[in-house]
Length: 170
Image (cartoon, rainbow, N blue to C red):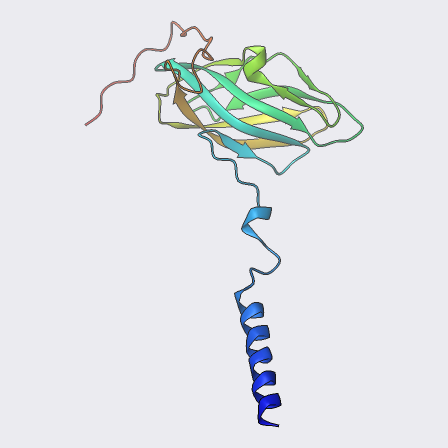
């Protein structure tokens, strides 16, 4: 009888340890984890992934991102993009068609030139309007276009003559 009791207690202890040490249903490996300098937006019909303004010099850069259309049947078009009128204002953008259940990588298409008042290391607020009525607003980092970096050669912008270098601050 004593052997049965010891065996039962041992099995109950093993079951308790297995239950209490398990991770549950929200495993960390089930969560999205993109290790990158760019920002991600995943709340709408269109996901905006690894978004950044790539810049060789202050006040001008190129917006780079991957747009992913989550609609399985209909294409979606990026109709407009704008800043919050602090660092970047209105941006001229051609309509960009994103196929159903497809993606468009702006790094492969040359990106979208932007001008404003920003330097590397800043974050700028950008808003996007899509043809299906959805929109997205996100904080996007300004990253340096330097040799041997993942952003090398992606800044195709030309500085606006109206923008100068930011004044030094103390």
